[in-house]
Length: 241
Image 1: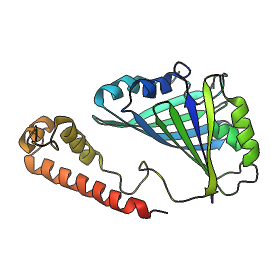
Image 2 (image 1 turned 180 degrees about the horizontal axis):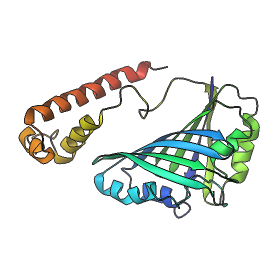
Image 3 (image 1 turned 90 degrees about the horizontal axis):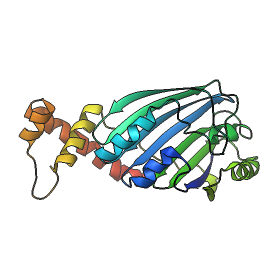
C-alpha cells in the first residue's frame, strides 16, 4: 500500500475553521476521512486543546452551514450533518456526514477522480497547516492528482509536497486500540487542568472526586488506567509499522 503526504498552508482570513487554529496555538485536530463516492463522505475528528480554545472552536465543529471541506474559492454545497460523539474539558470528537454533493473541491473528492476505491484519508490540523495523508493501493495517477490539487487552491493557500512511499503504519490515535475510555479521558483531563501532575500538586484525589461526583477510589483507578494506557502507547509507538 502506498501513501501520498502533503501539507496545505493557510493564510489568516482564508478559512474560518483554520483561523481558529491560527489564533489558538493549543488546538490540534486529527481526522480520518472516507469518500463513499463522488457525492458523499464521512469524517471522524478528534479536536484537542485548552478548554477556552475548545469553547471557541466547538460552534464551528457543529455548524452545518459552514463549509470546512473545499480548498478552492468555490463553496462546497451539500447536506451536512454533525454528531458530537464525545465532549471533555480538553477534547471533542465529532462525526460528520456530507451527502448529495453536486460538486466539491475537497481533497477526497478531487482524489477520487484519480484513485480507485478503498482509499483512506487522514488530516491533522495545527497552527496554519493541514497535513494530509492519502493511503491507496497504487499511485499510477498521483502525478495528475498533485497537479490538480495545486491548480484548485484558493488564494491564500499554499501546497507543500511531503512524500510518496510505502505505508509505514497507522499514524495517529483516533482509531487506535489504545484510545482511552471516555471516563478515563474525563478524569485525566480534569487532573491535568487542575494541576494534579504539578510539583507540588495543586489538587488532591479527594477534590477531583468531589468535582466529578464519584468515589475517590474510582478516580484513583481511572487515573491509573489512563496513565498506564498512555505509557504503553508511548513505548509501543516507535515500533508501529
